[in-house]
Image (cartoon, rainbow, N blue to C red; front, side):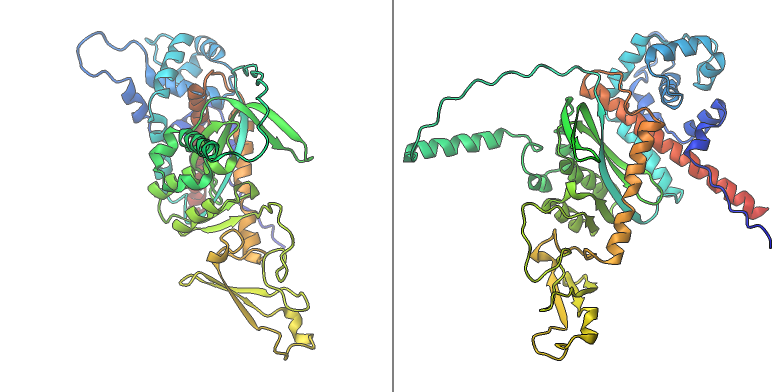
Length: 451
């Protein structure tokens, strides 16, 4: 019997095991740094020439993440001691190695612009053009990483005066309502409920994103709360190709669900009609997110989060109707024109003594508008819903890659604005590595096919 040899595709581990020069060339070749270089370009030909090689400095920052060099100080030391590494980064013999202060000033200048976003947009457009991102689903999730800043000591709240007992007078009620409306008007878009994001523009949602490091809390696998002081990275990942299509950084205290609509609106603006479904865990189970997915013609595959809801009589745990003997109706189909889910009679009807009785209804039709959270275009509890939701593990895999291979947790900058540059560099290098891997695999397949 002949041995069947399977093709071994190139993966992230193999990329990092390559020789440094080949690894750098593979990653650098995917990047178009023109938006970044334009920041440091001289406006006129007059005056002294530029002393620093900013292109090589940017490449060296990328190489620092790839080589897992923990600090800028050690990067400068490596550049001084290793001429091969210096040449790989693009420095020539006549270039002086930049100081730590030069790197700090460059990062500060980049943080004042949106050039990093433009570089990432170009890379994703390139991956789409080359056919590596196809019609697939989007998985959205958040991951946390700690800040370098030290948390400020909390201010002790003064004891408020005891409330006056009894019913408020008419004037007091009016004053209380005015104060409440004033407090609501002073809130930022991320302090308000998620539904207010639906009518806001992408620019407003991006500009008002909180970036200051804050205390965050989440439950671990044991059900216990874990705390950290820092930030959250919010990722929208294509499930098959595992590209980070869009990413955001926020304060660690921001609710995960409040970053979903900004991500989706960016995707709707730049890549309309490219994806099939939005896959999220129960932390994103908000009506406003379902409405946004509906406006984008995406299937909503979001785990249901019961909020102090009791048992609903006449329906099962997946909100499918049940018969008088409490057997669940089976999901049959979805009518996109009328946005209606069709359920057919339970399989137990074949042997049920009441199958010919008038109390048994053969078909149920339920409109999505009854409750967008309970009734999605792909019905909860169906096999196809489970298959879609299983693909959500792609974003968790990418989160692990960012921390294991790309030093997401190693933030060396203070303030949220500079930490955002670190986050953007990490996600950019991951995308560049993914595109380099895809190109290697395409070349390998073409070679094997030709052979």
